[in-house]
Image 1 (cartoon, rainbow, N blue to C red):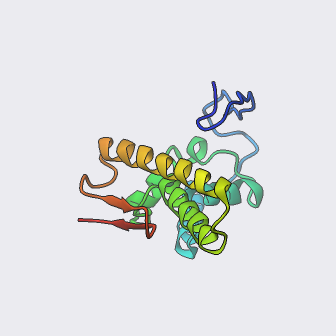
Image 2 (cartoon, rainbow, N blue to C red):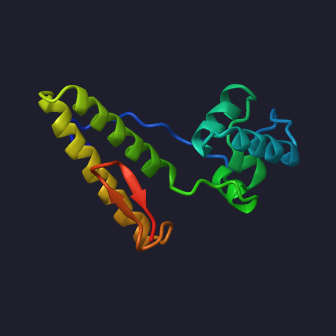
Image 3 (tube, rainbow, N blue to C red):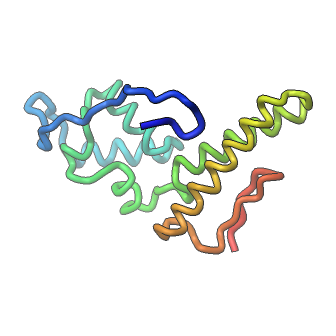
Length: 151
């Protein structure tokens, strides 16, 4: 499969273990994991950062295999889910950073081109999330200021 804005093909990928049950060596309680996830969400971590923290620092392989639900669903149930989907949020953040860079470096043509690519990804992702009804149909992204508008 080719990359979106590149000529390369790339074969690297990570695989989830085939077994869908909790490993024997994992001795964490479901309530303990849920409280830890909520504590990290209160600190301001997004779901993928919570998963990385649990994997690297606490030794939990997959939250879904142990608890039966994903991190984002646990956050939604308890009212800590982010307003914007995570990938869209970080694309908007990247767009803002590239725009700030272009204000300082007006002749950077490569960054101008990359900004166009990032904003096209943003519009593609917005279209997807509107179709899946994860953001409201009247939600708009203003590319000039990098702000999102809800109506």
